[in-house]
Length: 127
Image (cartoon, rainbow, N blue to C red):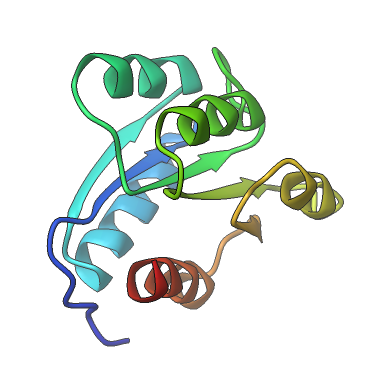
């Protein structure tokens, strides 16, 4: 894996599973070498976005508490048009629903390092 050399990319990871969050943050910080914050629920992520700053990319589990992935994505895209959203689920049947709802990408869990990196790299390079 090559590092993507694009400045000022901020990424939020939202998942209620601590191991998944830590894995994704580690992979993203290593592969993309950018600002990565994590949240255990959609509402916490949204409050951060409202109170402090937005992100260039959000990566969210669909089934999280507070605001689920779909709700968070809708608010995020309304506030930050053109920014990217990747939704994840352990149910691959959610892929079409995610795409129909406006997700820029979908990954079925368990997420592989290569798939995660490929999606984020595409977001960063192509905008």
